[in-house]
Image (cartoon, rainbow, N blue to C red; front, side, top):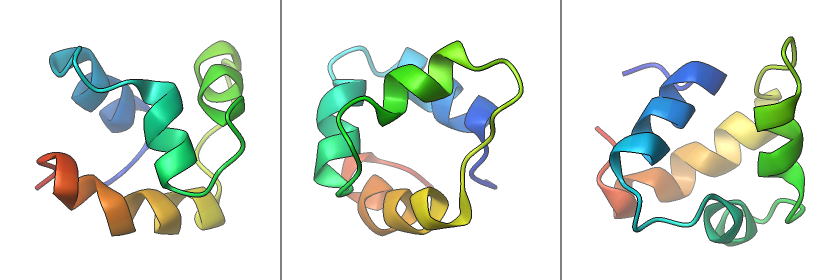
Length: 63
């Protein structure tokens, strides 16, 4: 599955035990990155954030 803002939201919505803030910190991003991403209607994942998330998301069940 391609990692986009929407697919990341869906992934996290299906896994309420995973803290979005903790996931962002684990990826090495600012702890407020997830809040900014959720609150900005037109902001997508940056290339840097996408790369960082793709490195850790398989640990959480991302396919």
